[in-house]
Length: 155
Image (cartoon, rainbow, N blue to C red; front, side, top):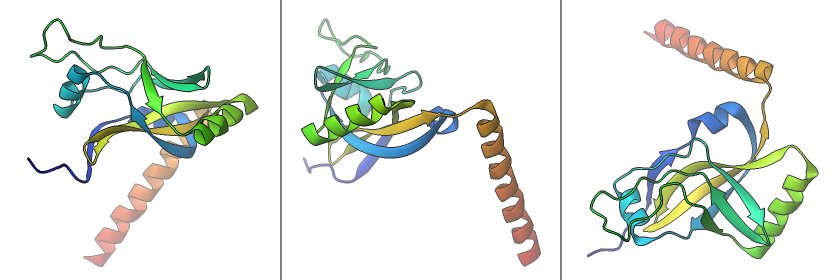
């Protein structure tokens, strides 16, 4: 069987980009069990309530929902278990320093397979206020209306 290449997106956290200002992104590997990988290959996962944290020098992904594999047996995994993230020591130290500064958190942005390996894209994020969210929506709507007008003029 040929080896997988490229990037296959499994799940995206669109809510994170709405609720947070993303300052920096990191790519991390995941430590998964066999049935978790099979469930992900079916394209089933949810990042909505998830976040990442660093404990004892190790990065952990918390509250990510990967549903049980339907064809699994007694070896099936727990759907919302804590999963270890694979990052370099320098990256972990940098994340600890930035999150301790204040107001920053680690949010999963997307979950995907890259060359056959499960990866998660983490965003170093700062929470938006309500007026920030309204302003962002107004800007998106204005851009959409300008693009629509340009299309009509070019016809």
